[in-house]
Image 1: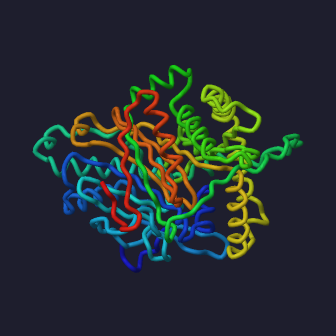
Image 2 (image 1 turned 180 degrees about the horizontal axis):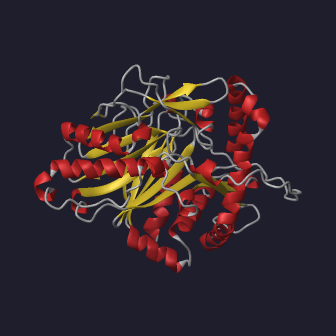
Length: 429
C-alpha cells in the first residue's frame, strides 16, 4: 500500500466498543486459539501460511485508533512475523495505535493465535486459525495435496467477512416496557490469594466427546448445560456457609451467527446469565442441570437475542452518546463494565465443534482455546473425539478445576490434565 494512498478506516462494532475502555494489564482482553499438530511446526512454512491467510482476512490487518468520539480500526501496511513463543500466554497485545491486534507464535507442535477482542470474537479468530492451519498443511505436505487439494467449508467473501452484523440486524430502539422484574441479587464473587503479577495459571483437560455426550443424554440435556451445571457445583463445593447467601451465576457467550444469517469475521456475539441459589435450592447435580436447562431454553432463542441486541445497540445510536467525547465515554464504559462483572461469578464459553477437511485431520491432534481474565473462567472446544476444556485463573488455588475434572472421572470419563508453570513463564506441554 502506497504512503499516498488513503488508508481505509472501519468503525468498531457494537460489542468491540467496550474492550478499549475496559482492558488493562490485569486483563488485556486477549484470547488464544491453538492447534496442536502431530509434527513439529516449521517457522518458514507457518509464515507463508499466515501470508496466504491474510489475503482472505484483510480485516485482521488493522490498528486501533482513537477518534474524538469513538475508537476505530484503520488498515495498516504493517505485516506480522511469526516467531517462537517466548512470553506468558494472553499478554498485552494492544499497546498503541501502531500495534497489530493479533499475534501468531509456535511452540514445538503447537500453532498459537492470540487476538485482542476488539478485532474479532472467538468464532472469527477460530475461522482465521482454521484457514492458517489449512494453508500450513497444504504447503508442508504439497506432494500429498498438489493434485486434489481439500476444500474448506468457510468460503465467505471479503465483504461478508467485514460485515458489521450488529448494525445489519439492529431493528431500532426497543419499545419502552414497564419493568416488573425484581432486581437481581449480587452474585457470589470468586476470591483468594492471587498469582504474582496476575500471571495466568492454565489448566487444560482433554475428555472423549462420545462419552460426554452419552452422559449428557443420560441427564436428558446438552453438553454445554452439563458442563455449566458441573462448574456451578464445583464452585459451590468451595464456598463456605456464609458465602452461600449469594447465588452462583455463570455468564454464557452466544454465537449470534447461529441465530442470524452472518458470515462476519468480526465480533457478533451476545451473553446471558445462568444463576443458581444454593442457599434455597438443592446442590444435587440433577437439580442444577434441570434449572440450567430452563435458562438455556428461555434465553437461547431469536426473540430474546434480538431484544438484547436492540437494547445494547440503542445506546450506541443515542444522540447524546454520539456527541459525548471519547474521554468521557471511556469513564462511563469502564464503570458499566465493572458493574456488569458484579452480576456473575464465572464465565464459560463453549466454542463447539471445530471442523477441518477430513484429509487434513490425520495431521492434527487437537484444538484448544483460553482467554485472559482478572479472576477465573473457562473455555471449551472439540475436535473429532477430543473435547479440550481450559481453565484460566489468577488464583493460586486450583480446587475448582480439580473438583470439576474429578466429577467427570467419577462418572467414568477419563480426563488427561496438563498445566503450565506460572513462575517460569514457560508452558509444561
